Image 1 (spheres, one colour):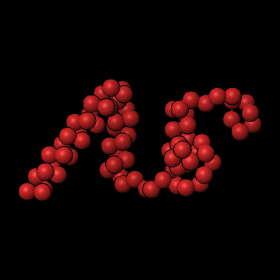
Image 2 (cartoon, rainbow, N blue to C red; image 1 turned 60 degrees about the vertical axis):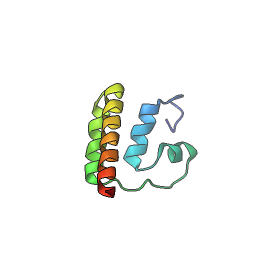
Image 3 (cartoon, one colour; image 1 turned 120 degrees about the vertical axis):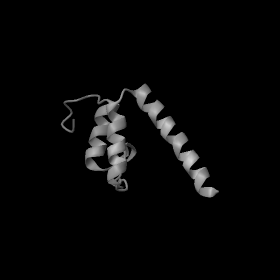
Image 4 (cartoon, helix red, strand yellow; image 1 turned 180 degrees about the vertical axis):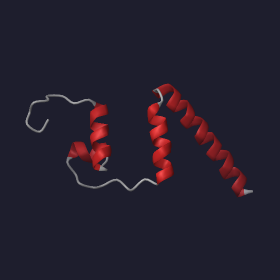
Length: 78
């Protein structure tokens, strides 16, 4: 890639490189060095599990989880 062998690189490859370097894809592409904040262990596990699913299933689980968080937040406010 840096030697000019690879002319184009896919978004998936960029994502994996950015993740391995602990930087955002934006900073990887723009060349900035701002590291992304550390992700808590349970959040990492959740992200890994969602990444293993196909995109439609992952999106559906994310939506359900978000709905659950909204219900929990309402319960905490009462």
